[in-house]
Length: 173
Image 1 (tube, helix red, strand yellow):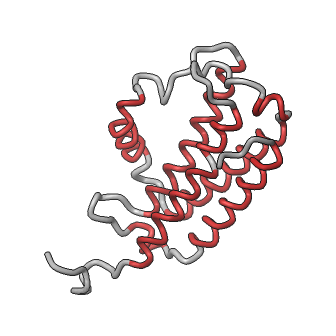
Image 2 (cartoon, helix red, strand yellow):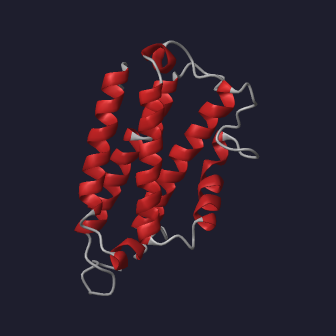
C-alpha cells in the first residue's frame, strides 16, 4: 500500500533504504561487477537507482519552476524506457562499486531532504507540478526511492543466492 502521509513516506524511505544497505554490505567489489545473463551487474542496478532518484528530483524542481518536465527524460518517452536505461548504463560504465554506493547514499539523502522540506500538502495535496498525470509528489518520491530500493534489494538477494559463474554449478546449459 503506498504511503499517503509525509510521516509514512519518511518511514518507508528509511526502512527500505536500511534493508537495501544491509543487503549491499554482503556484496564485495568483485561480486558487484559480476554480470548476470542479461549483462547486468549489481553495481549497475545500484547506480541506476541513484540516477532515477536524481531524475525524479529534477522533475520536481522543473515542475516547481514552471519548466517543461520531460518524462522520463528529454528525447525519451515512457515506451523508450528500455533504450533509456541502456543509455544510462552506458553513461555509467566507468562507475565503480564504491562510487555507485556513494551515489546511492547521496541520492537517498537528497530524497529525504526533499521529503522533509515539503509539507503534507506539498506531498499529497494534488498532482506533482509538471507531471501531467494524477500522481502526487509523494507518490513519485516513493516510486523513485522506496519502491526502487525494494526491487534492488530483491535483485541483489537473488544474485547472492546464485553460484559464481564458472564453478560448474550453473545448471544445464
